[in-house]
Every structure is written in C-alpha cells, then in structure tokens.
Length: 97
Image 1 (cartoon, rainbow, N blue to C red):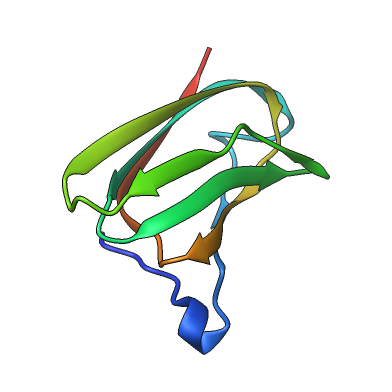
Image 2 (image 1 turned 90 degrees about the horizontal axis):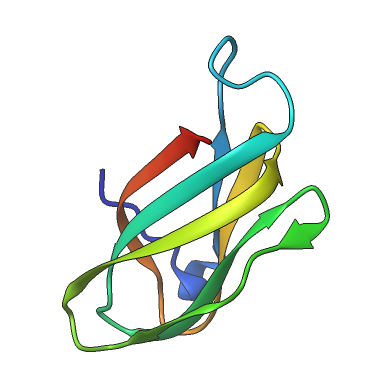
C-alpha cells in the first residue's frame, strides 16, 4: 500500500476502520506508521476527539517509522496531514498491548 492524501485535492487524511472481531472497542494500542519523508509536512493521528503528538517530515525522501502508544484507540482513526507537503504512507500496523 502506498497512500498519499494530496492537499492540492483537498485530501488531508487517511481514514482507517479496524474490523471486528479484531478490534471491537477502545483499547490500548501501539500504532506504527511507515512513511516516506518526500515532502516537508506535519502530521498526527486523530481518534475520538483526541490526537497524538505531531510528526514532522523533513523532506529528505528516506523511509521512516513513527511509533505511537495510544491508551485507548477506537476502531476508527485518521492520519491527518497539516502540510505544507503531502504525507505518503506505505504501511500501518496496529498492535494490541
């Protein structure tokens, strides 16, 4: 999977819906997002009215992985880019902890 919401097309997020029976309610999780730092951008995870810390892409094109420990991740969440560049994601892993 390579996904890139493009700000030029008014797409600022990737939406995820975790399926039953894997994820039925809010639960502790570790979320790992592998992304390409192709463009300078700031992004974070949004879930149930909350948000994670922000990650800043440097624009150096190297692949990186950001790890988020979430105390109560719901089945739906989004990766949201605040720009100025686009966020390119190659892999998202959600682990129950």
